[in-house]
Image (cartoon, rainbow, N blue to C red):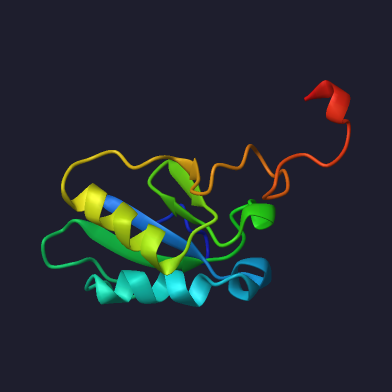
Length: 121
């Protein structure tokens, strides 16, 4: 039952998996979890409307862009309480939020952009 890909009961339309590993925790995953809870979610449960299921998981492999979540098949990175709230609101309205870094990063480059190999940029 420790495999997050095996669900022992049905999940909501959107399976929100919040990374709680050290890099995400140090960069604010508690705020991301609070945004989910403020939207009526509880860990391991599905909302009454069947829209969201919240799971706290171990490393999702985007530590450089922490904190991050995986919702269904998409990663959302460089999150804040506000950006996570906006993503959840968009999903609830049936809209498609921007996937990937929420601050415009490409892959895992520094927040200000590449700092090496400038001639290749």
